[in-house]
Amino acid sequence: MPQFTDISRINVKGGDGGAGCMSFRREAHVPKGGPDGGDGGCGGDVIIQADAQLSSLIDYRYKQADRRVLDEAFALRDTADDVLIVRHGLLTDTSIANIALWNGCEWHTPAQPLLAGTQRRYLLDTGQIKETDIPVASLGNYRHIRLFNALIPFGEVELPVGQIRMY
Image (cartoon, rainbow, N blue to C red; front, side, top):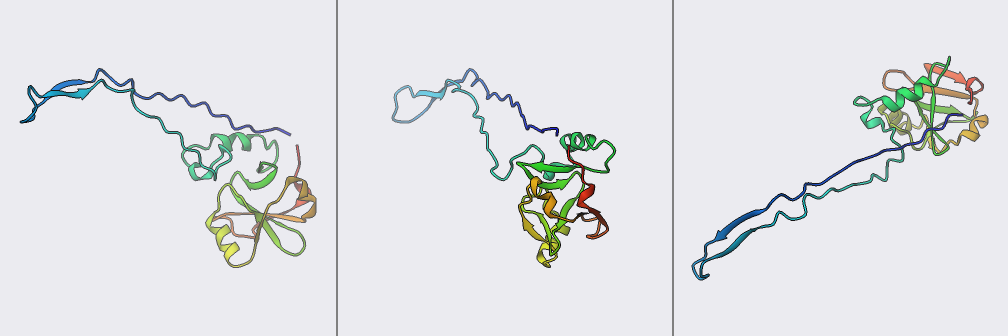
């Protein structure tokens, strides 16, 4: 099975501070004023802020701006129609849709999808699907999988789980 590794190289550099500025301040009670200005300091600061909600470079919030990682995953599909995306051993989505799996009693959707879409939110709010962690190893506990999003109604695309190929 191909493994995805998120690697990001970030080169950052603050300013070098410049030459500073030399001037004299004028105050009524200070003879000859005094120096005003500085040496330019150490330069600009660089702040790196981590987002605890993100654990992957696959971030659907920016899918329209940069789909490279999703396209790379999609290219691995061989003759399949789409790919299931797995993060930390848990199912998340496909490259184009949210998913729900039927265990014989209820539909489960991944608790940590890449994109918590509007259709998914509606189905959760109306009790049609239930959020849960879905480890890849538990696929055998499910009978059917549905793909859905704002343009694919829930129930329009349904496949037996047995048709999912694992690499």
